[in-house]
Image (cartoon, rainbow, N blue to C red; front, top):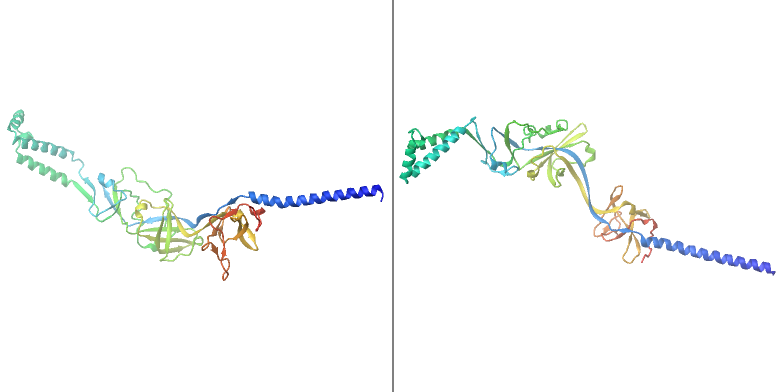
Length: 383
Protein backbone atom coordinates (compact mmCIF):
# COMPACT_ATOMS: atom_id res chain seq x y z
CA UNK A 1 0.00 0.00 0.00
CA UNK A 2 1.46 3.26 -1.01
CA UNK A 3 2.09 6.03 1.45
CA UNK A 4 -0.62 8.23 -0.09
CA UNK A 5 -3.29 5.55 0.32
CA UNK A 6 -2.37 5.00 3.96
CA UNK A 7 -2.45 8.70 4.58
CA UNK A 8 -5.94 9.02 3.04
CA UNK A 9 -7.22 6.13 5.16
CA UNK A 10 -5.91 7.71 8.34
CA UNK A 11 -7.53 11.02 7.39
CA UNK A 12 -10.86 9.26 6.73
CA UNK A 13 -10.71 7.42 10.07
CA UNK A 14 -9.93 10.63 11.92
CA UNK A 15 -12.85 12.37 10.20
CA UNK A 16 -15.19 9.50 11.04
CA UNK A 17 -14.10 9.60 14.68
CA UNK A 18 -14.69 13.33 14.81
CA UNK A 19 -18.12 12.95 13.23
CA UNK A 20 -18.99 10.13 15.65
CA UNK A 21 -17.87 12.20 18.63
CA UNK A 22 -19.86 15.14 17.32
CA UNK A 23 -22.97 12.97 16.89
CA UNK A 24 -22.61 11.61 20.44
CA UNK A 25 -22.09 15.13 21.76
CA UNK A 26 -25.15 16.42 19.93
CA UNK A 27 -27.16 13.46 21.21
CA UNK A 28 -26.31 14.13 24.83
CA UNK A 29 -26.88 17.83 24.37
CA UNK A 30 -30.28 17.15 22.79
CA UNK A 31 -31.17 14.89 25.71
CA UNK A 32 -29.94 17.29 28.37
CA UNK A 33 -31.62 20.44 27.03
CA UNK A 34 -35.23 19.24 27.63
CA UNK A 35 -34.20 17.96 31.06
CA UNK A 36 -32.61 21.30 31.88
CA UNK A 37 -35.65 23.13 30.57
CA UNK A 38 -37.96 20.86 32.56
CA UNK A 39 -35.93 21.40 35.72
CA UNK A 40 -36.24 25.15 35.32
CA UNK A 41 -39.88 25.06 34.18
CA UNK A 42 -42.23 27.16 36.28
CA UNK A 43 -45.00 25.48 38.24
CA UNK A 44 -48.15 26.81 39.87
CA UNK A 45 -50.56 25.46 42.45
CA UNK A 46 -54.27 25.10 41.64
CA UNK A 47 -56.48 27.76 43.18
CA UNK A 48 -59.75 27.01 44.98
CA UNK A 49 -62.55 29.14 43.61
CA UNK A 50 -66.29 29.27 43.01
CA UNK A 51 -67.69 29.48 39.51
CA UNK A 52 -70.88 31.53 39.64
CA UNK A 53 -73.37 31.55 36.78
CA UNK A 54 -75.65 34.57 37.06
CA UNK A 55 -78.01 36.72 35.04
CA UNK A 56 -78.20 40.50 35.46
CA UNK A 57 -81.64 42.06 35.28
CA UNK A 58 -83.76 45.06 36.27
CA UNK A 59 -85.76 44.75 39.46
CA UNK A 60 -88.70 46.63 40.98
CA UNK A 61 -89.38 46.49 44.72
CA UNK A 62 -93.02 46.03 45.66
CA UNK A 63 -93.98 46.67 49.29
CA UNK A 64 -96.99 47.23 51.52
CA UNK A 65 -96.57 50.96 52.24
CA UNK A 66 -98.96 53.21 54.15
CA UNK A 67 -98.25 56.88 53.48
CA UNK A 68 -99.09 59.72 55.90
CA UNK A 69 -98.92 63.38 54.84
CA UNK A 70 -98.09 66.04 57.44
CA UNK A 71 -98.23 69.81 57.25
CA UNK A 72 -95.45 70.68 59.65
CA UNK A 73 -92.19 69.25 60.87
CA UNK A 74 -91.38 65.76 62.05
CA UNK A 75 -90.55 64.93 65.66
CA UNK A 76 -86.76 64.90 66.14
CA UNK A 77 -86.86 61.56 67.95
CA UNK A 78 -88.82 60.06 65.06
CA UNK A 79 -86.26 61.28 62.52
CA UNK A 80 -83.61 59.18 64.25
CA UNK A 81 -85.76 56.08 63.70
CA UNK A 82 -85.46 56.18 59.90
CA UNK A 83 -85.37 52.59 58.62
CA UNK A 84 -86.14 51.14 62.05
CA UNK A 85 -89.15 49.07 63.04
CA UNK A 86 -91.52 51.07 65.28
CA UNK A 87 -94.56 49.86 67.24
CA UNK A 88 -98.18 50.89 66.72
CA UNK A 89 -98.93 54.23 68.40
CA UNK A 90 -95.42 55.58 67.89
CA UNK A 91 -95.41 59.41 67.86
CA UNK A 92 -94.03 60.71 64.56
CA UNK A 93 -95.24 64.36 64.42
CA UNK A 94 -97.17 66.87 66.55
CA UNK A 95 -98.14 69.56 64.08
CA UNK A 96 -99.87 72.91 64.60
CA UNK A 97 -102.81 73.56 62.28
CA UNK A 98 -102.98 77.24 63.21
CA UNK A 99 -100.98 79.80 61.26
CA UNK A 100 -99.42 81.24 64.40
CA UNK A 101 -99.80 80.23 68.03
CA UNK A 102 -96.56 81.90 69.15
CA UNK A 103 -98.53 84.63 70.96
CA UNK A 104 -100.37 82.04 73.00
CA UNK A 105 -97.11 80.30 73.87
CA UNK A 106 -95.56 83.60 74.99
CA UNK A 107 -98.60 84.47 77.13
CA UNK A 108 -98.44 81.03 78.73
CA UNK A 109 -94.81 81.61 79.71
CA UNK A 110 -95.69 84.97 81.32
CA UNK A 111 -98.59 83.45 83.26
CA UNK A 112 -96.43 80.60 84.51
CA UNK A 113 -93.78 83.08 85.71
CA UNK A 114 -96.46 85.13 87.49
CA UNK A 115 -97.93 82.03 89.15
CA UNK A 116 -94.47 81.02 90.30
CA UNK A 117 -93.86 84.48 91.78
CA UNK A 118 -97.22 84.57 93.60
CA UNK A 119 -96.67 81.07 94.96
CA UNK A 120 -93.40 82.23 96.46
CA UNK A 121 -95.17 85.23 98.01
CA UNK A 122 -97.16 82.92 100.26
CA UNK A 123 -93.87 81.98 101.88
CA UNK A 124 -92.10 85.34 101.57
CA UNK A 125 -94.55 88.15 102.28
CA UNK A 126 -91.85 90.78 102.00
CA UNK A 127 -91.11 89.80 98.46
CA UNK A 128 -94.80 89.87 97.54
CA UNK A 129 -95.23 93.34 99.04
CA UNK A 130 -92.15 94.57 97.19
CA UNK A 131 -93.40 93.22 93.88
CA UNK A 132 -96.95 94.40 94.47
CA UNK A 133 -95.91 97.89 95.53
CA UNK A 134 -93.65 98.22 92.53
CA UNK A 135 -96.64 97.66 90.24
CA UNK A 136 -98.72 100.74 89.57
CA UNK A 137 -101.25 98.90 87.39
CA UNK A 138 -103.79 96.55 88.99
CA UNK A 139 -104.39 94.95 85.57
CA UNK A 140 -100.92 93.38 85.51
CA UNK A 141 -100.61 89.62 85.94
CA UNK A 142 -99.30 90.08 89.48
CA UNK A 143 -102.42 92.03 90.30
CA UNK A 144 -104.61 89.02 89.51
CA UNK A 145 -105.46 86.18 91.86
CA UNK A 146 -103.83 82.79 91.63
CA UNK A 147 -107.20 81.31 90.81
CA UNK A 148 -107.63 83.64 87.82
CA UNK A 149 -104.10 82.96 86.57
CA UNK A 150 -104.50 79.19 86.80
CA UNK A 151 -107.83 79.40 85.02
CA UNK A 152 -106.26 81.41 82.18
CA UNK A 153 -103.33 78.97 82.03
CA UNK A 154 -105.69 76.01 81.55
CA UNK A 155 -107.60 77.90 78.86
CA UNK A 156 -104.40 78.66 76.92
CA UNK A 157 -103.18 75.06 77.19
CA UNK A 158 -106.53 73.86 75.90
CA UNK A 159 -106.43 76.33 73.01
CA UNK A 160 -102.89 75.32 72.04
CA UNK A 161 -103.80 71.64 72.24
CA UNK A 162 -106.83 72.16 70.04
CA UNK A 163 -104.55 73.61 67.38
CA UNK A 164 -102.31 70.51 67.31
CA UNK A 165 -102.60 67.32 65.31
CA UNK A 166 -100.76 64.34 66.76
CA UNK A 167 -99.48 61.89 64.12
CA UNK A 168 -98.93 58.36 65.41
CA UNK A 169 -98.43 55.06 63.65
CA UNK A 170 -101.56 52.96 63.27
CA UNK A 171 -99.63 49.68 62.95
CA UNK A 172 -96.11 48.42 63.50
CA UNK A 173 -93.61 48.49 60.64
CA UNK A 174 -90.48 50.08 59.19
CA UNK A 175 -90.57 53.86 59.47
CA UNK A 176 -89.34 55.88 56.49
CA UNK A 177 -89.48 59.53 55.46
CA UNK A 178 -88.39 58.76 51.89
CA UNK A 179 -91.59 59.00 49.85
CA UNK A 180 -90.82 58.43 46.16
CA UNK A 181 -94.34 58.66 44.73
CA UNK A 182 -94.51 55.00 43.61
CA UNK A 183 -96.12 53.73 46.82
CA UNK A 184 -99.60 53.58 45.28
CA UNK A 185 -98.39 52.30 41.90
CA UNK A 186 -96.39 49.21 42.89
CA UNK A 187 -98.70 47.49 45.36
CA UNK A 188 -98.59 43.80 46.35
CA UNK A 189 -101.68 42.49 44.60
CA UNK A 190 -102.86 41.37 41.14
CA UNK A 191 -99.35 40.14 40.31
CA UNK A 192 -100.59 38.72 37.00
CA UNK A 193 -100.71 42.31 35.72
CA UNK A 194 -97.01 42.87 36.35
CA UNK A 195 -95.98 42.07 32.78
CA UNK A 196 -92.82 43.21 30.99
CA UNK A 197 -94.74 45.86 29.01
CA UNK A 198 -96.47 47.24 32.11
CA UNK A 199 -93.28 47.76 34.07
CA UNK A 200 -91.81 51.02 32.81
CA UNK A 201 -88.56 51.98 34.50
CA UNK A 202 -87.96 55.76 34.65
CA UNK A 203 -84.56 56.98 33.53
CA UNK A 204 -84.38 59.08 36.67
CA UNK A 205 -86.36 58.56 39.86
CA UNK A 206 -88.30 61.73 40.68
CA UNK A 207 -86.85 63.72 43.54
CA UNK A 208 -89.09 65.49 46.01
CA UNK A 209 -89.31 69.19 45.19
CA UNK A 210 -88.92 71.87 47.84
CA UNK A 211 -92.30 72.87 49.25
CA UNK A 212 -94.03 69.56 48.53
CA UNK A 213 -96.04 68.10 51.43
CA UNK A 214 -93.92 66.31 53.98
CA UNK A 215 -94.79 62.97 55.38
CA UNK A 216 -93.77 59.51 56.40
CA UNK A 217 -94.68 55.95 55.60
CA UNK A 218 -94.90 52.60 57.34
CA UNK A 219 -93.66 49.52 55.50
CA UNK A 220 -94.66 45.95 56.28
CA UNK A 221 -91.33 44.21 56.76
CA UNK A 222 -92.77 40.73 57.22
CA UNK A 223 -93.20 40.26 53.47
CA UNK A 224 -92.10 42.13 50.37
CA UNK A 225 -91.79 41.38 46.68
CA UNK A 226 -89.40 41.83 43.79
CA UNK A 227 -90.45 41.93 40.13
CA UNK A 228 -87.53 40.92 37.87
CA UNK A 229 -87.63 41.82 34.17
CA UNK A 230 -86.04 39.14 31.95
CA UNK A 231 -85.02 40.36 28.48
CA UNK A 232 -83.95 36.94 27.19
CA UNK A 233 -85.57 34.00 29.00
CA UNK A 234 -83.35 31.54 27.07
CA UNK A 235 -80.33 32.75 29.02
CA UNK A 236 -81.69 31.62 32.37
CA UNK A 237 -82.66 28.18 33.58
CA UNK A 238 -86.28 27.06 33.65
CA UNK A 239 -87.97 28.29 36.79
CA UNK A 240 -91.45 27.37 37.97
CA UNK A 241 -93.87 28.92 40.41
CA UNK A 242 -92.97 27.67 43.88
CA UNK A 243 -89.23 27.35 43.16
CA UNK A 244 -86.71 28.99 45.44
CA UNK A 245 -84.49 31.53 43.71
CA UNK A 246 -81.29 33.23 44.86
CA UNK A 247 -80.91 36.92 44.13
CA UNK A 248 -78.10 39.38 44.75
CA UNK A 249 -78.85 43.10 44.86
CA UNK A 250 -76.28 45.01 42.83
CA UNK A 251 -76.09 47.69 45.51
CA UNK A 252 -74.94 45.13 48.02
CA UNK A 253 -73.00 41.90 48.26
CA UNK A 254 -75.53 39.75 50.09
CA UNK A 255 -77.31 36.86 48.44
CA UNK A 256 -80.92 36.44 49.55
CA UNK A 257 -83.37 33.63 48.89
CA UNK A 258 -87.02 34.08 47.93
CA UNK A 259 -89.84 32.01 46.50
CA UNK A 260 -91.31 32.53 43.03
CA UNK A 261 -95.05 33.28 43.23
CA UNK A 262 -95.74 34.38 39.63
CA UNK A 263 -94.16 34.08 36.18
CA UNK A 264 -95.58 36.31 33.44
CA UNK A 265 -94.49 35.62 29.84
CA UNK A 266 -95.24 37.97 26.93
CA UNK A 267 -93.61 38.74 23.56
CA UNK A 268 -90.51 36.63 24.23
CA UNK A 269 -89.99 38.51 27.49
CA UNK A 270 -90.64 37.48 31.04
CA UNK A 271 -91.25 38.85 34.53
CA UNK A 272 -90.56 36.79 37.63
CA UNK A 273 -92.29 37.83 40.87
CA UNK A 274 -90.39 36.75 43.99
CA UNK A 275 -91.63 36.90 47.58
CA UNK A 276 -89.23 37.54 50.48
CA UNK A 277 -89.83 37.52 54.22
CA UNK A 278 -86.50 38.85 55.53
CA UNK A 279 -83.80 41.49 54.94
CA UNK A 280 -86.16 44.34 53.92
CA UNK A 281 -84.44 46.65 56.40
CA UNK A 282 -81.39 46.54 54.13
CA UNK A 283 -83.27 47.37 50.92
CA UNK A 284 -86.40 49.28 52.03
CA UNK A 285 -85.27 52.53 50.38
CA UNK A 286 -84.62 50.93 46.99
CA UNK A 287 -87.24 50.99 44.24
CA UNK A 288 -85.52 50.10 40.95
CA UNK A 289 -82.38 48.11 41.82
CA UNK A 290 -80.20 46.18 39.40
CA UNK A 291 -80.17 42.54 40.51
CA UNK A 292 -78.37 39.30 39.75
CA UNK A 293 -80.14 35.96 39.58
CA UNK A 294 -77.69 33.37 40.88
CA UNK A 295 -78.40 30.28 38.76
CA UNK A 296 -75.59 27.99 39.93
CA UNK A 297 -72.44 27.81 42.01
CA UNK A 298 -69.68 25.24 41.51
CA UNK A 299 -66.66 24.84 43.73
CA UNK A 300 -63.57 23.78 41.84
CA UNK A 301 -59.95 24.41 41.00
CA UNK A 302 -59.05 27.39 38.83
CA UNK A 303 -56.01 26.73 36.63
CA UNK A 304 -54.49 28.56 33.63
CA UNK A 305 -55.92 27.19 30.38
CA UNK A 306 -52.41 26.91 28.87
CA UNK A 307 -51.48 24.23 31.41
CA UNK A 308 -53.91 21.77 29.79
CA UNK A 309 -52.54 18.96 27.62
CA UNK A 310 -54.10 15.92 25.96
CA UNK A 311 -52.91 12.42 26.71
CA UNK A 312 -54.54 9.56 24.79
CA UNK A 313 -57.61 11.67 24.18
CA UNK A 314 -57.95 12.76 27.80
CA UNK A 315 -57.53 16.35 28.97
CA UNK A 316 -55.22 16.86 31.92
CA UNK A 317 -52.07 18.51 33.24
CA UNK A 318 -48.50 17.52 34.01
CA UNK A 319 -47.54 17.73 37.67
CA UNK A 320 -44.24 17.39 39.46
CA UNK A 321 -44.45 14.80 42.19
CA UNK A 322 -42.51 15.11 45.44
CA UNK A 323 -39.99 12.58 44.12
CA UNK A 324 -39.33 14.77 41.08
CA UNK A 325 -41.07 12.47 38.60
CA UNK A 326 -43.42 14.05 36.05
CA UNK A 327 -46.94 12.61 36.16
CA UNK A 328 -50.04 13.17 34.05
CA UNK A 329 -53.20 13.97 36.00
CA UNK A 330 -56.57 13.89 34.20
CA UNK A 331 -59.08 16.66 34.90
CA UNK A 332 -62.84 17.04 34.50
CA UNK A 333 -63.54 20.48 33.03
CA UNK A 334 -66.49 22.47 34.41
CA UNK A 335 -66.06 25.47 32.15
CA UNK A 336 -63.26 27.05 30.14
CA UNK A 337 -62.74 30.75 29.67
CA UNK A 338 -60.06 32.57 27.73
CA UNK A 339 -57.25 32.48 30.28
CA UNK A 340 -58.56 30.19 32.99
CA UNK A 341 -60.37 26.88 33.25
CA UNK A 342 -62.45 25.58 36.15
CA UNK A 343 -62.01 21.86 36.84
CA UNK A 344 -63.77 19.47 39.19
CA UNK A 345 -62.19 19.00 42.63
CA UNK A 346 -63.48 15.45 42.69
CA UNK A 347 -64.55 13.30 45.60
CA UNK A 348 -61.58 12.81 47.86
CA UNK A 349 -59.29 13.74 44.98
CA UNK A 350 -60.84 11.25 42.52
CA UNK A 351 -63.05 11.96 39.51
CA UNK A 352 -65.26 9.79 37.34
CA UNK A 353 -64.36 10.23 33.67
CA UNK A 354 -66.79 7.69 32.25
CA UNK A 355 -69.79 5.95 33.74
CA UNK A 356 -69.27 2.44 35.02
CA UNK A 357 -65.51 3.03 35.14
CA UNK A 358 -63.36 3.23 38.22
CA UNK A 359 -62.70 6.83 39.43
CA UNK A 360 -59.19 8.10 38.71
CA UNK A 361 -56.97 10.40 40.65
CA UNK A 362 -57.04 14.08 39.67
CA UNK A 363 -55.13 17.14 40.86
CA UNK A 364 -55.05 18.23 44.50
CA UNK A 365 -54.57 21.59 46.16
CA UNK A 366 -50.80 21.13 46.62
CA UNK A 367 -49.90 19.62 43.23
CA UNK A 368 -47.25 21.57 41.33
CA UNK A 369 -48.67 22.02 37.81
CA UNK A 370 -46.27 22.87 34.98
CA UNK A 371 -47.24 26.26 33.58
CA UNK A 372 -45.78 25.55 30.13
CA UNK A 373 -46.02 21.79 29.43
CA UNK A 374 -44.61 21.88 25.87
CA UNK A 375 -41.17 20.68 27.03
CA UNK A 376 -42.52 18.21 29.58
CA UNK A 377 -42.97 14.45 29.18
CA UNK A 378 -44.56 11.99 31.54
CA UNK A 379 -41.99 9.92 33.40
CA UNK A 380 -39.20 12.50 33.32
CA UNK A 381 -37.09 12.60 36.47
CA UNK A 382 -36.22 16.17 37.31
CA UNK A 383 -34.46 15.79 40.67
